[in-house]
Image (cartoon, rainbow, N blue to C red; front, side, top):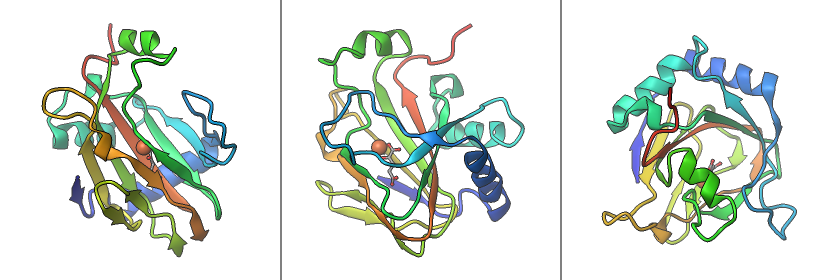
Length: 185
Ligand SMILES: O=C(O)CCC(=O)C(=O)O
Ligand SMILES: [Fe+2]
């Protein structure tokens, strides 16, 4: 797992927060969970062609050395106090019903990049219980990790959780990359 402090400046973070507040709706899951509190945040698509988003989108791809066309639509996420995203992997489970659709949209997820857009008063850390890493929200801080092992198999040690916010509101953007092309012409 890599960390890049101050990847975004205060102005860029504020612009992303404004877009999230304007467009947020309840977050969804690819596979329904038996736990109604599995993912309680709100999310939105960040339009990759909008003037505030495009430079950020492209700078994340450049940092990772990945073609921007392999990147899914960036997600904005907002967690109010008590909201969370319980432990999960970002890679797809190839035995699930959704997998055929994912193959058509670029295949497996490889890298995840996420950026904290604000400092949070209490809680809201991103926790990797198997890797033993816990990162507190810090405005502008980017985290990146590869969900795959070198041989292309899913790295189960990337299990992670967006811990419940205690006080304040947590805003992040998340960018997932595919092994193939998400965008095609
Ligand atoms: O909110 C967090 O800290 C984690 C978010 C996350 O895991 C995701 O967007 O896939
Ligand atoms: Fe995740």
